[in-house]
Image (tube, rainbow, N blue to C red; front, side, top):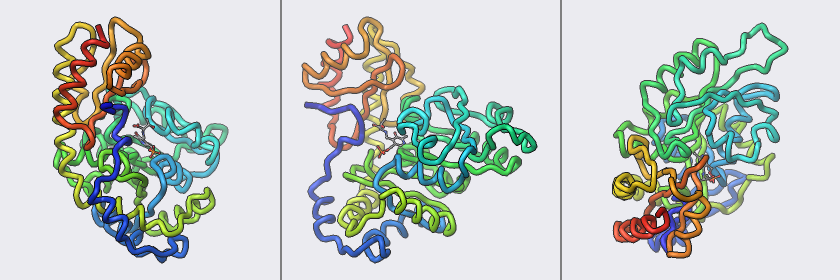
Length: 340
Ligand code: TLP
């Protein structure tokens, strides 16, 4: 079975498992796990931030960041198909009492021009208070689109003007980084908080890291514990994350090539609508023209290919380290049949 449902499906390699097996551990709730401490320090340095915190998942990472930056009834401005809005079970509302104000992005990209009119006037005590601008890089539902640095800079200028925070959902920031060669610390410096995932294209089995200044991370540490995310001898997992950071970033380029080959093949079929401009990293999102999404997924799965739904009327295929170029060739044949 070829599995292109997500880059979260990867399994730890033998070398990664060895690193996990040999990890030095301690009780991380006492901050005594040397491997977690090493991972946090390493990640903070990579992103040029003062401090970092290891958390179990991307959802928890985003939600802790939003919680620390806000008070109940505050508002977050984000794109209409942002992960924090679509796929985090309404947690911003449930856990932090937050209101989301949505912007219709172009391929996931929102601009300062679009955001500014949504910022609530300070004196309007009867409105929610705008507190954070949130963006996703790369943007998942848009199909792995890279958020342009210039647009990020403009949003930062706007945030400063209105005294707002900026949060980056950088679950796949690595993919943007290898594709653009923009350093991770350059991406991070425009944000007050950043959440990055080790368990997607980097191939670790679990884990995300959140980043910010020391005060921010101190409070995030408290919230993580309050939400049941305080972990004990978790160096065993942090070791996989460290291994991933040290070894698996450059190879993401290969995943992008695999996605591109698949996308170009699909663009030549008359059974599918695909915008090649959105295929910038490891996600291929396309609209089947002859059959409903569910049927395409079902036929693929009967023929040895797992793929998933990717937003309204779209199928999503995600490349990763556990699929080879040969698998992509097979996937093309299966998709051609399924889409017909
Ligand atoms: N995304 C998953 C699904 O939830 C859709 C996937 O398969 O792509 N931010 C972004 C941009 C994400 O894509 C995801 C996971 C998360 C956050 C949450 O990460 P986890 O699943 O570790 O909580």
